Length: 316
Image (tube, rainbow, N blue to C red):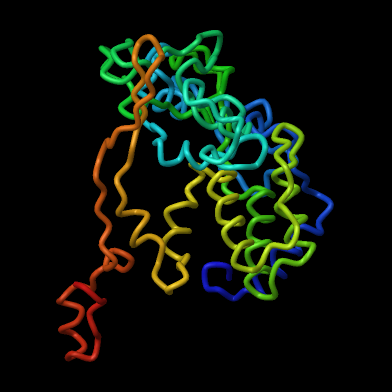
């Protein structure tokens, strides 16, 4: 209903869940994804990991851990994402007095450190060196060295010391309460504007005990609240397989789908010299997204069956 822009129905469906006594936000954002906290108070629907399997490997850790832990570094966050994390005062990095160019990862929304491994992150007792030329840094000698200057931290389970130590079994959370709150906030805002329940839903997420970000300022317009909700959805649900689909359904002020511009932007990384005196943003890769990609093409053989009555999707 949310994707179909049936705002009132979507809001009521989310509210039905929010009114259930069964669910509450888990207090620690990072730890809600760990195996020790499977099926915690926030989880509504999850794909269960088989903890008793034999000869298994824990795929999230193997694919995404840094090379120092035997991982493949498969998911590497971009500078595009890193720049979206607010400072702890609630301002963007380019407007906050807390931002220090030679210490750019300090004083960020705590969800940043819970999501992204960066230079000098501490992970299972290791202080990561992701400077240029370091073993697992940019242009490092590891086959699995980062190409963007970052590794994924979210979902990695510290119960797994190395990827061949098969004692981790965190579930994949398909639906959790924070998403429902975001769904509710978006639906109500689009239906009637930013009332008190919209503020409450977003502030509950921002003020989770382990996050403690400032609440939204009062008096936002519908358009301003829309931007805040979309930003919060990007940060809170990062790497949970929502962003791509959100961009394909959201539109800008002119009515164009955001995917047409955002998914066609280059992706960037961060290169740090060995002395950590120079932090340089660089373009890693150009991306291509054609507006016609929003819909699949219809096979010509199917069009032929209907004698020209079946019209090909635009652009194909």
